[in-house]
Length: 167
Image 1: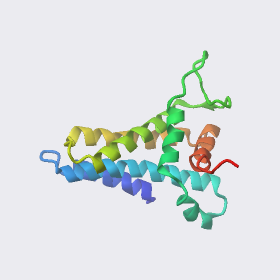
Image 2: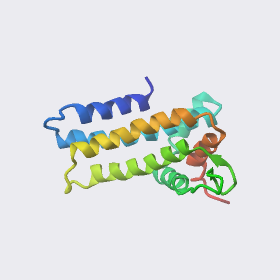
Image 3: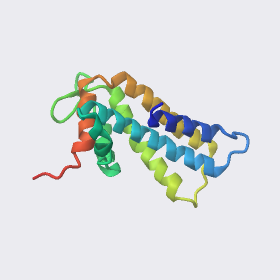
Image 4: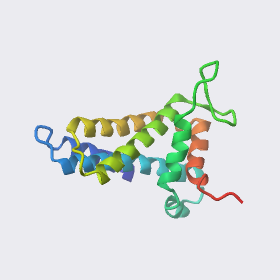
């Protein structure tokens, strides 16, 4: 099974391990792992779709940057429907709602991961961790629905290429 699927299954396992008396460390790791599941899903899809030479994919995968990916996702998250109800990029490309949903979940999960990993002063509730894992699960489903759309290929390329300095 691909890493991203294993990570998603692990996130669910950690959060569901002991729902009657959850261990906060399990909940925190579950939230963090849910984010990394989506992070690695998008990297896997981008390198598979954008990088033709399979042996280069692992090296290219290391070039993805969390902040750049977040910025791209924030831009997709902010798209608003035009008069016909379609989401359009500034270049006029039609974006399916499911792609916007994936981008929104990425941003939300990254924020949740930062809280889970770095804010030990605030307790994490089981319902919160469960919600975050569900976010990742829904994003995986949404991705499957939009992955063959031309806008998805543009989105994936932006996740990598937007971090390249302009010359």
